[in-house]
Image (cartoon, rainbow, N blue to C red; front, side):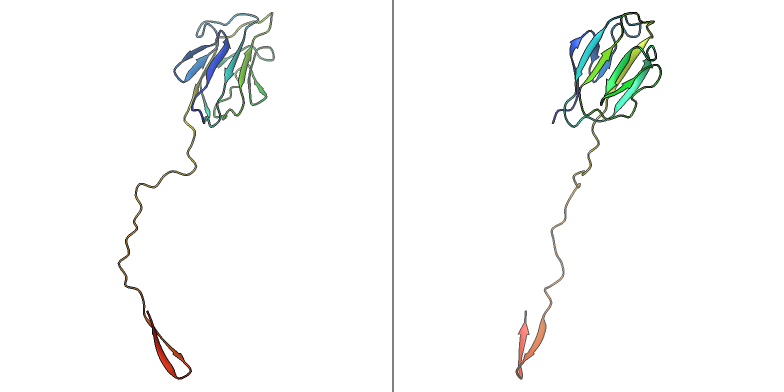
Length: 135
């Protein structure tokens, strides 16, 4: 499983594990689109900034549209992400989102003890008048 995303088309900008809208922190332009490839096993999104024109310019994460100040903070992406600003935008400042590490559901133990200090128990068994010792 991969660990982080990448911009595969459009003018969004990637800086390490963070991706921002075109020209961020300056206002983005009309008619812009970008596509972000999301690998399997990514952690939740950490939003550093989010300001788009509501009901017009959208960041789509897991099929849901985020716009205005409604950001995908804490959402774990399970599919590719797209950004689109429409032709007659009143552009906002844009957005900057960062990938966070996936939470490991089963952390490895620091150490495992395999030593035993108790001796094996012994038991007497009486079968048909004869006594047997089981070790």
